[in-house]
Amino acid sequence: MKKSLVSTLTAAMVIGAAGTTFAAANPFSDVPADHWAYDAVTQLAADGVIEGYGNSTFKGDRSITRYEMAQMVAKAMAKQNVGGTDKALIDKLAAEFADELNNLGVRVAQLEKNADKVQWHGMLRYDYGSLRYDKAPIDLYVNGGKVAQKGDTKVRANNNSTTFRLEPIAEVNDHWKVRARLDAYGDMKNDSQGTLGLKRLWAEGRYGNTTWKFGRMPVGIDMDIMFDTHFSGAQVAFGKKKGLITTINAGRFTLNSGNEYFLYAKDVAKGNAVNDATASYQAIGLNVSAGKWTNTGVAYHHLDSDDFGFLPGYGKAAIGENAHKHEMNVVTSKATYHFNKNWALQYNYGHNFAAENYNDSFHYVLGYKDFENFNTEHQGQWGASVAYRYVGQNVGPTATYTMDPGTKGLALSIIGNPMKHTYTWLQYEVGKTLIGNHNYKELFGRMEWQF
Image 1 (cartoon, rainbow, N blue to C red):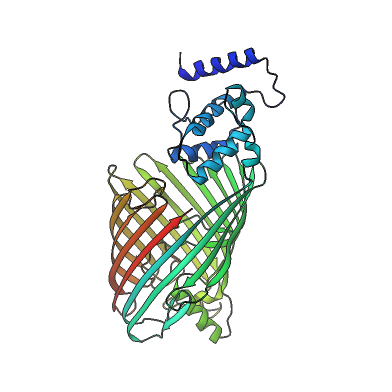
Image 2: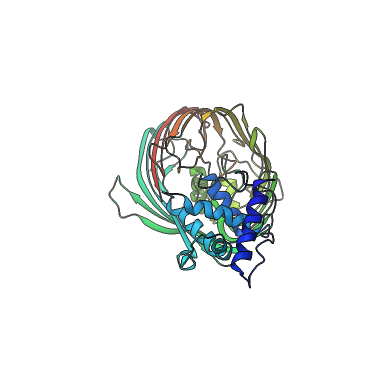
């Protein structure tokens, strides 16, 4: 007889002995497949707080009963030294399954009060960057401020900054939540007070395998190669996490991004009496993870702005149209293949069919151990990578990696978390500019404390 069945029968005997009548949900009924508890338990399992139920596995691909869920919550409550975020999840789960836990002999008094409707996440980040150009191909910007004019030689620019971030998640009901991101930026180089801004704010609703979002939110498609930023509008994503996921975006997209070529084009456009720094935006992406293949997929992005025609090398429009091209039609593909638990090969590629020049972006990465993002709950993880990157400035607004748009070259990187809830990242890049083939190099470092 399976342990899960034994546990269920034991729970039934406890109920009979106590003579308890349930006015709420039937304890042996299934927890609905779209219930928020599945996400909470999956997160706790990923953080190592629980191992599952019955035979110590969490079978997240099928519905389970309220008593099976209560068993997992009871195990989580017995854990010591649980982090603050996980503790909040446990309290919320305990309040939801209080009747079942009480009948299993687990004390959950007052947990309803402790299950906060708003969860807070955040971090403090310190960034250092040292940038060198033999010759500036365009006007160059660092954190939105101009540091060089087009044609300047021996360009040197440093970034010495902090970012304080708060990310609240407010529960509305079983399906909907509201999420936000507030960033406070400080310039340590000039000892400035810095700026505070509401970077993201959106409502998110989940029904089964479909998630709806409305507001200003992450693009969520091709975050590595070119679109590690946000847009305002609507998004729908559907599919299983371990299968095919389809994401559709529609809305508006600001060109005030991490791509200094976009900022340059905006300034040139203003000089030509054109002011269209916010593009209309539509996209669709397909992503799948299976076996040794992770983060694998294809996508299409369409943007429309009169500013695009002022990007260097973008090209003129056809006769009979406006003097400058105004569309961006980008097709992308990506894949990560894990040879074993230590080694992986990753690639990203994007092509803008509307641009005549500098219309490709791609990178190839050989990664060792945890070279990508990892769960900082577990101390002592680290990884390293070597990459070749070609970042065409006319393809996308903001790449995840630090190599500047309009450059090509090698990047050496190492990342690790010497302490729990922290990580350190060091990267060195050396290469050439795409315009003029001038020398370019950059040293980047980051330390982050998460809470």
